[in-house]
Length: 296
Length: 235
Ligand SMILES: Nc1ncnc2c1ncn2[C@@H]1O[C@H](COP(=O)(O)OP(=O)(O)O)[C@@H](O)[C@H]1O
Ligand SMILES: [Mg+2]
Image 1 (cartoon, rainbow over the protein chains, first blue to last red):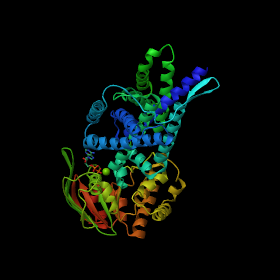
Image 2: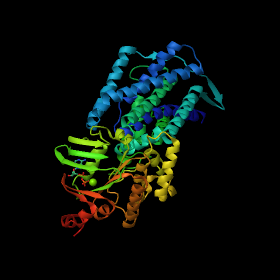
Image 3: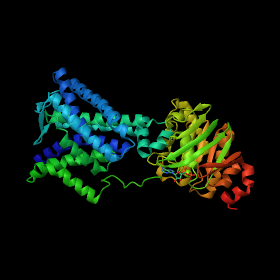
Image 4: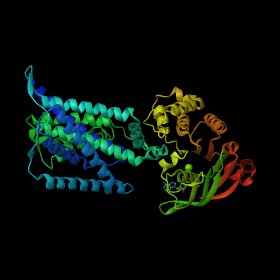
């Protein structure tokens, strides 16, 4: 039993990081209707920025760790905005397939630049945030899992506030629903798209930092597997639906961890794909998604 | 106020407007009538910057706005209520109205404007917190007009406000349009297939036929014109 609870906590913390990535896919899909496949590599860059700024800063402290995470988030927000401006914006009137292929190209570019700068060998991530383990009942709890969950909850709360309560968040929802009508309100669509990329990328960066904190070995391809799982999480929750992406991430984290700990552990890598196929077959709109009636 | 000169607009290979010219003066209500597919909506979209003109010029307050993006034109005091209303169905009534005042920084001005819109369409106040997608067609039209008024425009363009709405509501919406024009001297360009109603509230009108303006006169004369009567007023 205590092992099961441990697994659940572990799964939730992995799932929280999937959620942070999945939201970026869903936000961008909401305003531009395409899957930004370079998003998983922005996650990777997030932990790399953490790696370098953590080394520069040195030491282990709450303030320092938070500073490093903030640096990752700001750096990746700028990166996300830059990617959209340089690679996707010129293609906005082209077919979705063109943009999709470009996104895969940007993904490969980031991985290759990562290899150039960082090398191909995994390196240990500096301990920027404090960590201990303790026992509750018979359950061994790593403080890392609690930190990951706590930080994620705070970030999701902030996101919810931005999207639901602020003017720019309302404008994001307006643009997602009907960009033409939004521009008739005086909303600068390009600006809102940039903001959306910045927001999604900052969350992915936080995910990348936390991932490296929990699994402290990083390398330029580290984004690929979590990125794919998070993408499935976004589809599972109903692409375009923020709450769905968060729940999808948590759910996938738990399922994956439970499978890994069972006698079907060899299936761990495949579980996301199996789920993806099942969703597309039986509930293509996702768990929380509605089949959208296109408004004319 | 608005001066359109030899405007040509197309979609891909087809040309929808073959060089049209018309004008709207300060304080007027002007109607653009025409059959389905004549190019009425295209005209409004080109004026408000939603689509690019191929050639010709649009002047607003003596300023060329032909190649300006839509969100910049809004700043000059133009509001466009598009065909099919296009309210943000995923937002509440209040959020839609707030988006209408997106460019307004002054909270007091927004509050005053909101009060005015609620006085014109009390129904919107009752439904303030409702998700707009659940409003009736007529209520969505009120919201679309109210949302446009929130930007405090000097010039308002309405694309078929009567489309798909119960006749009784259409009458009340048109009464409000006239009232808005009278109260604030708001200049209005009205596009309608319901020519009878539109010509009754406007001072002048233009007839658009497959991308060309074929007739322009004051509204009373158009109402009496046998050609207009047979084509647009059902005899
Ligand atoms: N998005 C579009 N793509 C291609 N053709 C269009 C588009 N919108 C309108 N058209 C064409 O342009 C012409 C004028 O359309 P429109 O301006 O909508 O007419 P109206 O508003 O008078 O009914 C029509 O022939 C229509 O088929
Ligand atoms: Mg039309």
